[in-house]
Image 1: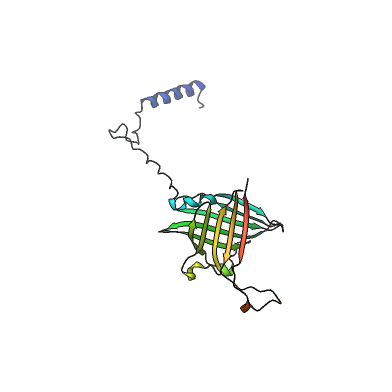
Image 2: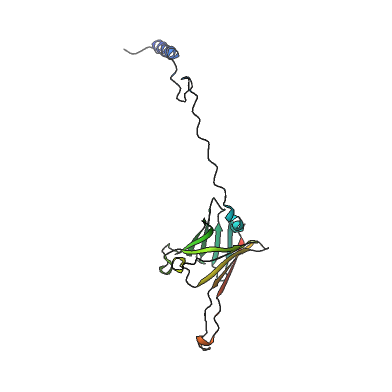
Length: 212
């Protein structure tokens, strides 16, 4: 026996009417039970930048330069969040292949500000000479400039011959890196013996414009 359209319509109306007689289900939030409705927890405020990192805000942004040989160097720093900043460096060959990467963190630890950095090759393998992070501490910061030096424990600094690194931003809105080694004796073939040469630091300077 097949139901007629009239039977279907009548049955549907009866079902709707029966639903109207069903009492509402108890509220899940406590309303209707004599209890105050529960409130969702208030969102917590994000951690404000630590005051120790305020002088390093000049690092924030994306900086880039192209070398005469076609290599491209670029560095990026995220704004301070809580007690840390995060930075990355990439060098790209003219053929587009990555030469190497560096990843840095600046962290407030106790009464000092520490910079740690790791170096990996283009295919992301660790450099055998730099398996452990290099660890520096903030020596001074002022006027859009900050200088870091190896921590006192040479065994944990992993800084080799590095003496200091200075980041600064000049009036042309360029980020400058000055990397200075410990005093070293250097001679060219045919010149005097190393013992006759005054030891001087090796200085490398890199300048990168702010990316637009």
